[in-house]
Structure formats: structure tokens, C-alpha cells
Amino acid sequence: MNFSPAGLIPNRAQTLEILRLMGRHRPLLMLLGDDDGYGTRWLLDGQEVLPGIAKYLMEAGLVADAGATGLGVRRLALTESGDRVRKDGETWWKSLGFIERLKIRILG
Image (cartoon, rainbow, N blue to C red; front, side, top):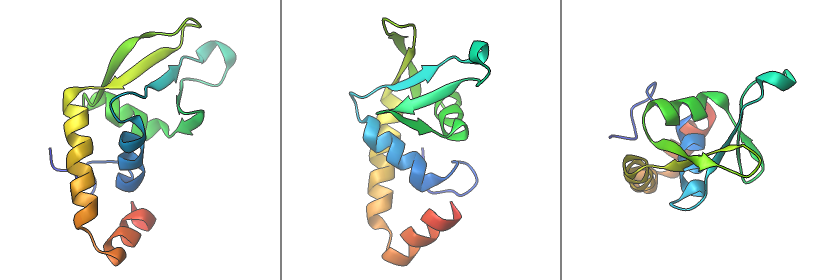
């Protein structure tokens, strides 16, 4: 999977940062919240992940359900393809110059 095409990956810099933070061992937590009026939320290390990015990761098969916590929160872990996209994304990011990185951060 190529990490660079615009329009396919929502906010590429932020999506790559989420993948980097997850690595192979940190789960994305999915809190089902329809009962509390807030809707579903996704957290990584206590910080909220944008719904568009979380949904993209799930729909693309980059994360998969890894079971529930003791409190019923769903844990989503990187799949093999998710880890491969993370590595490819890091290689792609390192190949960019400063101006290219800045444009991607600002424009998505």
C-alpha cells in the first residue's frame, strides 16, 4: 500500500503519527458511547483520535479488534498490513523535504 496519494488517506501526517504511536504494542481504544449521548470515540494514550482517521484505519484493515478491556472498552491493534503501512509511511515521510512535510501537515 502506497502511503503518499492525497485523498485516499485522511490527514496523512496525523494518520502516520497515530500509526507510529501505536507501533506493534499500543492499542487504539474504541469507546462505544451511544448510551451517553456522545457517540463512539477512539483514544490513544488518553488523546482522542479523529473519527475519520479511526474509521479509515478500520475500513482499510490496518487495525483489528483485539478484545475488550475489563471495562468493556474495545481494543484495536495494528494488523500485519497496518504494521507494513506504518513502516512504508515512515520511509515515505523520511524521503520528504522540509517544505513538502510542512505542506502535508498544513493541507493534509
